[in-house]
Picture 1 (cartoon, rainbow, N blue to C red):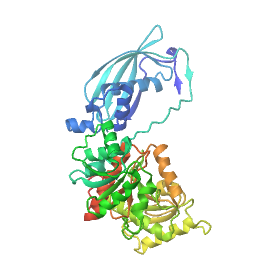
Picture 2 (cartoon, rainbow, N blue to C red):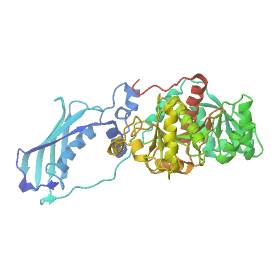
Picture 3 (cartoon, rainbow, N blue to C red):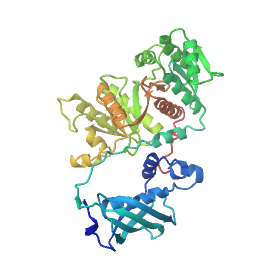
Length: 465
């Protein structure tokens, strides 16, 4: 990039850039400017006005600055003044062309610039005049690298929440909600109409925490259990008594809940191996991603993996993925007898071909890159309906699955929810480190999965429907 000095520039010269206004542009501009007018914000604009969001006038004006700083005069340019008149609006999705022309060169290293912004159909959006100072001497630069921005809109999970509207709240036994985080998560799910909570644990402790967070427990069922460690057993009993249709883990270790959920006598087994699914909304990834099993089965054998795959397919169908693509992960995409996970993956794919696993497209072994990236799959010569576009990733063991899921949450800012599937009722097995949003998303998953189990119907509309 070259920043040209006053002497290098001639009157009548022009430069322009073309830009498409995207919803993300409007979100970033709102953060940078502090302008939170809802007519400018995706989602809010449609709700408030019934129209697409409108780009703020100053977003349009900033495009002239981009031409000055990058094209004419280029790097080193300093603004002195600008006057603009706005004639039309720019909506998200519109392409616009910003053009600047040197009207006059004035002494004192000053340029008078005509500015014009048009939509690509020729409609005038804005025009005006700016005064700028080019760099005092010719400036040559290789350009700059700025930190990348990642937006986390939570839009995919919002669709799941919306799909739960109109369903009666699910009676849910909340085991040991004895801190503000777990009790707050139950409260958020209650306010959203997802659950009708039955709070199981030491009543005095629960009421004290509720007072701290401002939850009036009038009308809320409480099962008083003297010791919080006895809460999971009582929560499972409430399911057998027909009082609860789901279980939510509170401020207690997962092992304590699972011990009572999975026990053969009096637990919640339903004939298939119980497993856990993380559902993630990953920035930059088009759809929701399911990762399994990352919480229950430590080193699953082939039979257990078949149940894990079937459980994940069932959950995927419950949240709107009619025929989920399931990638069975290993370190490589070829079968290697020295790596048992590759043999299991190939067997699972063949089991799906023969109808032993139903409802999804299953392929493996797949390495992580060619499971989620179509170009990586093509480069390695892998041709399948799953490679490069998997909806479900099945890890070879709990350690791999857990590290993968938490990497996406803590390094890629993915939103997450998770539930235990394959039991008689959904079990919300959130981490004690999960925030209220993760607990709310887990409740939405439980409602949708529970409804699908009871009726065989998915409540989430297909994308574009």
